[in-house]
Structures are given as structure tokens and as C-alpha cells.
Length: 276
Image (cartoon, rainbow, N blue to C red; front, side, top):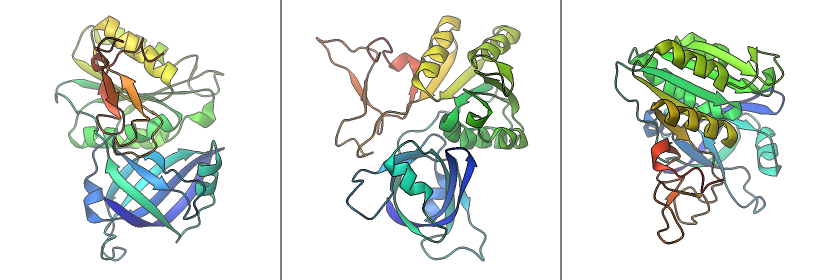
């Protein structure tokens, strides 16, 4: 669905990281954790392409704030890294942005008796927040493992805790949580579980996803990853965001489209070596 959204707020959370909330049609309140939207950052021709942003949160607006066609809201996190996101950061409250979505396939919540381990860094924490919210509503145990280069890259940490998630952090420079990679506390926690049923959900930079995927495969643990592939259209038309699937080879190409078949994939359905 394509719609015009009104900006409710657009706030810088941490240097370069912004949190935007906009109005939306009622159906958007039912967005699944892991889905995303394509945002047109400017009515001008340049920049031409929309920007893909994960849905951080979604819900219905209070009745006194709702209007026909704008009964709901949703939130996005974005990192200013180029012209498009720089324009988005200048978008004023009350402005209108053109949205396409919700799009993509979200997370499979899995069995209710499993412990859920959420692993993210930077804006990769965005889709995990709505996931944690849904899991906690179903009273499933949730552990968050948040990583980044420094404290500035660890977003919404307190908000995850307010949902009832047990939160762990690791930063490369030791400025928040323990010093080092987030896979260290994740591995330690897996050892403590001693083989109990668990599913890992991860989103973030590709090196982090690869490390989490390897760990999950080695431990025979179920793992879903949300990929941040480059998306030009968001609807599978341009095929700019394909990644190699598990059976890919030069003789038998097996590509998966991140925007339509994903962005969430079971790690067993991907061929990470071919995607290097």
C-alpha cells in the first residue's frame, strides 16, 4: 500500500541516529515484526530512489488524534549516512512523506516454550524492538544482546528492558556493557542454557550476522537473520537485492530476493560463502 504519512516527531537519539514517528492507515498497525517500508525522502527527482527502513513499532493512535486514513502510527530508526537520510533528518514535524509498505516477510515467532535471543547492532536493533514487543505480549522469555562500536551505536536499550527483555550489551571500545564483540555474551549465554530449546533472531551489519550465523550452525541452534540488502524498488521488480540461496552454484543459480522473500531468512536457506 502507498500512502502519505504525516510526521509526528523526528528526533535525534544519538549522533547520526534518528527516530521518526508518522501517521498511517489503520492496517499498518498490524505490521509484522521484521517488515519494512520504502520511504520517499523528497518530492524532488533527486534523490530518485526510496530508502528502505525497518518498522520499529506500530499501533493505533488515540481516538482524539486519529483521522480518516490516518488511524495508526508507526516508528522508524535511521542512520544518516548519505544524501537521502540527511534530507530525512531535516524533515519537520507536520510534513508529509510518501510511504510504500509494509513490505517483506517478517520473523517467525517460533514455539512458545523456547527462549528467544535477539542480537542486533545500530539500526539493526529497529526490527528487533517490535519483535521483542510481540514476544513479550505472548509472555515468551526474551534476551537482548546489543552491540556496537561504542555507546552511541546501542539504541533503545532501556526501552527493550521496559518490555521485560533481559538486556546484555557489548561495545568494541568498552564504553557500554562489556568490551568486545556481542557474540561473546551470546555464546556465554548459550553455554548456560545447556542445550535447552532456543531461537536466535539477528539484524545488523553483515560481519555480525555472519558471526551469529556461524555460531548458530555450529551449535545446531535455530536462527533467523534480517538482511540489510540494497533495495531499489522494495517489491522484487529490480532484483538489485538478491542474495545466494542454499543451493546456489554457477550451474544451478539459486538467488533469493531480500525485499520479497525476506528480509528475514532462516540461516539454513542462505549460502553465506557465496555471499562473501
